[in-house]
Every structure is written in structure tokens, then in C-alpha cells.
Length: 226
View 1 (cartoon, helix red, strand yellow):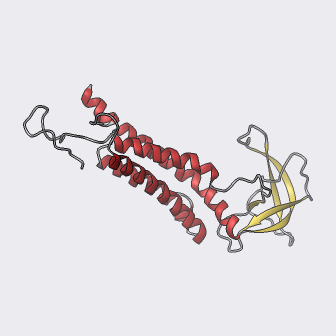
View 2 (cartoon, rainbow, N blue to C red):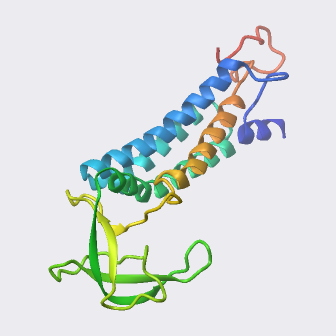
View 3 (tube, rainbow, N blue to C red):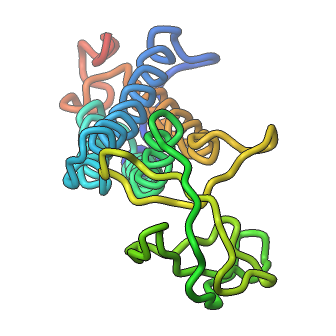
């Protein structure tokens, strides 16, 4: 049972509070992992590279973090939790990165609604409506807009959309006002959870004795990770 517990949750062979350097290592690993996931996706959205902007590079970064945690001897369950959090962050990053690009260099234009359809339910539990729109020249946009599109919206109404002049991210409905959230706000809990999960995994990987020595054999007592 002790061996199984060590394999699943890590040895955590220390008494009292964990060493400060170990805490710092865990925070650094989680911060670098989250930063790499977000940075790669944001760079891909900014430069128009689909392999990075779609979150594929973020998945690779999440896998690299899980591989590092396995290398330092973290428990399998904690490695799996950190990998899952990294994947979730990588899946959420593309939309937020596109929002950052539009917030920095986006332009607002007025479009005309051509049709209104019911869409999936929003996060708040309210119905979401999707508007097909066309620009001033009558050219339809390839994406449907949900921000600003509501039950009272009718074909022929005007909507404000923000678009990327360089065409590297799709347009979306404009959201203005002091209450508009930042594009990265929704990613903060995922990033914080990834850092916390990495911290716990690294801290619990601390082993006083070398796993290659049998318990009770002479020479045991040197720290395996210093």
C-alpha cells in the first residue's frame, strides 16, 4: 500500500513544511508551463500561424510539462491532473488569444444582419442567437455573430463587429463599455489551477532516500533531489 500510494501521489518524504527551493521549483514549472501554452497560442494568433493559434502547440507544451513532472518523480495521479489542466488551458487559449489580437489592433465596422438563428445555450443559461451578417458592400461574412445578436434582432438591423485588418483572426461582435471583461480573464482560473497542480506535484515528488536502495540498507539518508 505504501508503494502504491507513493506511485500514485508521490513520496513526499519530508516532515513539516516543504523546502523553499522545492516550492519555488514547483511554482516555476507551473508558471513556465502556463506561459508557454498561452504564449505559443497568442504568438500564433498574432502572426497568423494556424498550427500555433489553434492550440496544437499548447497541447505540446502541456505534454512537455507532464513529462517534466514524471521525470522529477511526481505521482502518476498528480501528473495526470496537471496534464489535464494543461490541455484544458490549451483548448481555451485560442479564443482568448483571438480576443487579445482584436483588442490590440482590431477595427470596428457596421454590418447588416441577413438572418437570425437560435444557437447553443449561453453559459448563463440564456438562449444564444446567431446572426449571419454582410458588410457594406453586401459581401457576407464567413462567421456568424452572437455578441449583440438577440431575440429582438431582425434582418436589416445594423450590428457593430470588430475585425482584424490583417485578416488573421475571424471577426466577432464588438463589446464595449467599462464592464467589458479582458480577453484573458476567463483563462486566469485555469492558469492558476495549472500552477497549483504543478506545485503540489513537484513538492510531493521529494524523496529523501534513493529509490534504487532497499529500505534499511546502509547508506540510506542522502537526498535524491537536492
